[in-house]
Amino acid sequence: MSEQDVKKIHSFKDLLVWQEAHKLVIKIYKITKRYPREEQFGLVGQMRRAAVSITSNIAEGFVRKSYKDKVHYYYMSKGSLSELQNQLLISQDVGYLQQGVCGDVERDIITVQKIISKFIQKTESFI
Image (tube, rainbow, N blue to C red):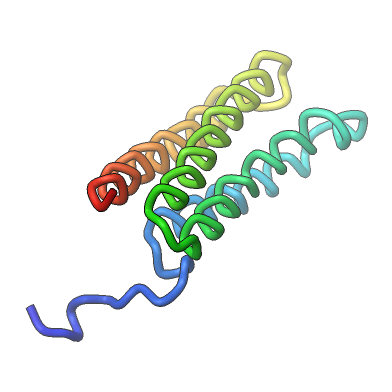
């Protein structure tokens, strides 16, 4: 494998986990645009904050000096993923999302959960 084959990580934006989580944030913003107006300060706000928190904690963890600090922020990101998953299920149960849309987003959440779990495990191996 040549040096060109190995992509250097210079920024949190180079991390696969951040890239996949960022796609999820954009998807959440798009689907919550269709929620009822009365939910703008309720479920919509909570879902958007949880989604943004996922990528924000990855970004903040990336710049931390100690691996212990990094892992702390990555776990917070993982917690926000679970929070978002719960809010997604509530959205389906109250009729704001169709089952197909909910299932699609939930698969994305599970994908990001798997990636971040491996990312945490790898980071913890340096502690």
